[in-house]
Length: 129
Image 1 (cartoon, rainbow, N blue to C red):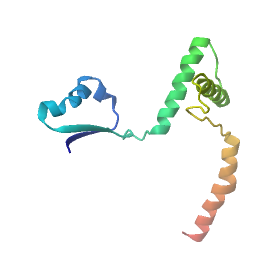
Image 2 (tube, one colour):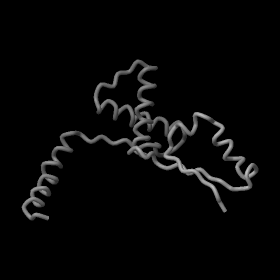
Image 3 (cartoon, helix red, strand yellow):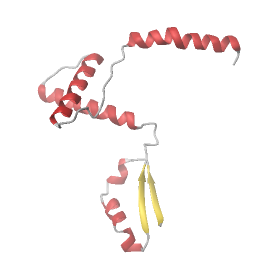
Image 4 (spheres, helix red, strand yellow):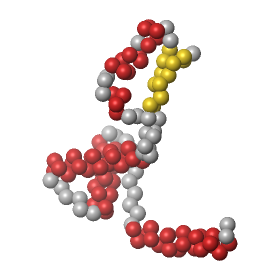
């Protein structure tokens, strides 16, 4: 039975003092109580998607700086990220990349807004529901 627990939104402050996790490991010995620490998605509006984006961006930054590459458009970033994910999977003898990268052109987004979302909005306005 766990009688003590701590809830965290993943804030880095918990790790500024590495003794926090070490103390948690010895909590039963020190106090005779089991304890756990639950980490959840950050409470500031960021989740898994933001973490994946951060991985892709930091990888692109590291590689482009070390190899003097220039990624000047969203399409360049997409092509680099897709290629890098496939190369990483291949070098690890995996069939699929860890992150699947997709590109959605702004023209496609606008087309959906014009054809689908606009029509639904107009239908909503005319029906009053």
